[in-house]
Length: 66
Image (cartoon, rainbow, N blue to C red):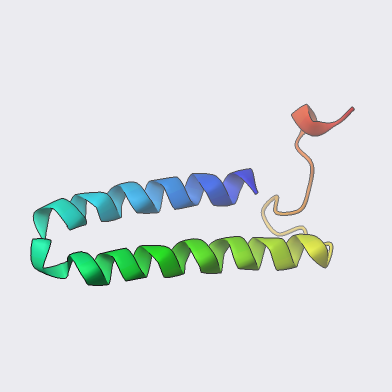
């Protein structure tokens, strides 16, 4: 989930810049951001539940052992 959180942070940062520069698109940008967060975390959760090992999703990092 850490990789997903990192991707969400990067995406939301870029979208926040768009939000500031394009006031007429704020509602659309906000909706898109909400959908991206929902889709990314839902997908990661499903993969983790199914035992998926896609780019680290669902696997432990060395710091999580023990």
